[in-house]
Length: 193
Image (cartoon, rainbow, N blue to C red):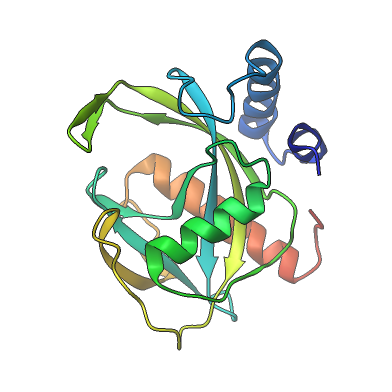
């Protein structure tokens, strides 16, 4: 599927997503030649997987090395327009789990996420934006978790009641609770993405 069509077909559920979708589509129109690549140093598309267990009452998180906090999995698409493939590939690399299924094959969240300047592989990376598309991935709690030391320092399942400002910053609380809510709506067929 054409990656622009995937974004166009996404149905925003709130003002934030309406605005972020508009900005992302405008940016794609202005920078079509490198929007899928990190060489666009101001903003580029990333794809993330919000990993939940089969009963949708736990979320698998990784302790991210650069951000030094618990986070979802995901990364740069690096030219791959199959965003779901990227989300699953990143989830496998960052958790050690081999088997994922998508709750839906459609994008479930669109967000513009700031990335602060940092050092990666001994090179400074300037502050920039991730034009994030996200999927809800399902995995078994029985699978063995493996830390990918290049990416993270821990991998663990979190109960839904942990997604508060006691454990995460307010932006992450908003994002993760939005995804939890979407997963439950999709499961209960209240919405179809």
